[in-house]
Image (cartoon, rainbow, N blue to C red; front, side, top):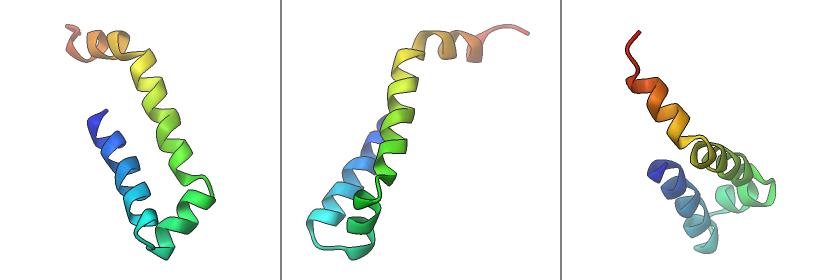
Length: 56
């Protein structure tokens, strides 16, 4: 989850510094997909963790 948040933070930092590519990405809402993924992971963290360490 930290990597996704770091990516979104980086996108905003680059856009704030005038990087046109990132400004366009933010304006197009690309960061919202990552924030949606982050919300899903947070909401399902316990289930995902249990599934990853479960004996199969």
